[in-house]
Length: 285
Image 1 (cartoon, rainbow, N blue to C red):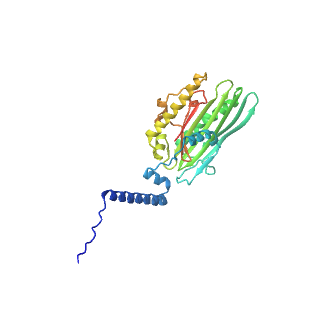
Image 2: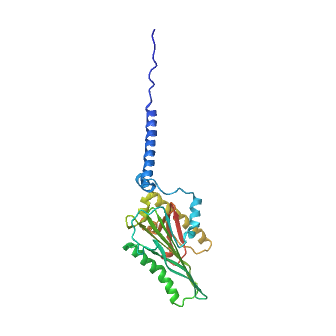
Image 3: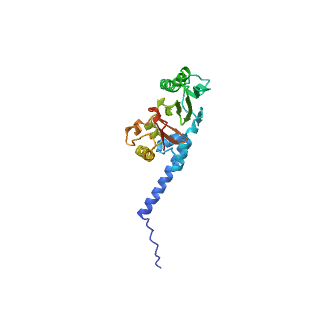
């Protein structure tokens, strides 16, 4: 009796490729999972180029911008462990403390609410930060107290963060003198506690595994949209602050007012830092 055996089923090349890709994905996922367990999320993200930034809708971005002023609690917020050996100036105090506080109202002269931070770290770069903070914010408060200035409203608030071993201090001040326009100033200081160096926006973009071109395009697009809104108001007779979205001012290399909090990158353009205005643009990535 003749018995005919079934021919071996041939597996197509397409199916082989599908299986290989599926196995490769599983292996990569397993490697990442093991790395997370051993090295932690932060180091793993840097190794594999995984962005630590949350994707956000336009509505969520607008909410973050609206709530910007609510960030300033004159305190330090630490997220996670600090993996750096940081030498403090005063070991009995926190990494960021209020060094100058003045809340006082003198009728007809001034109303002041000032909280000025001091970064309690023994380091030359940090010393430079502290000196700049004093010169910009504290010296102004003291000059108001010493002169016969009339009808001055001056506020200074700050917030400090330590996230992923990056120390950030944000300071915002508002000054209104007599009939002059209100002036809004914002300064940020970003410092890598592990590598003992100042952080630039380019550094931050690299650490967050973001696409630099995409970030730059987002900045210019949002500034262009704000200028379009301003021009529409100008046509109605309002005075506006003019922006040029193609200016080098908005280049990532020249954008030095920024910070990261809760996986959101804030890039800030406070025009009052250089002019007598309260206009400010915030781009959130």
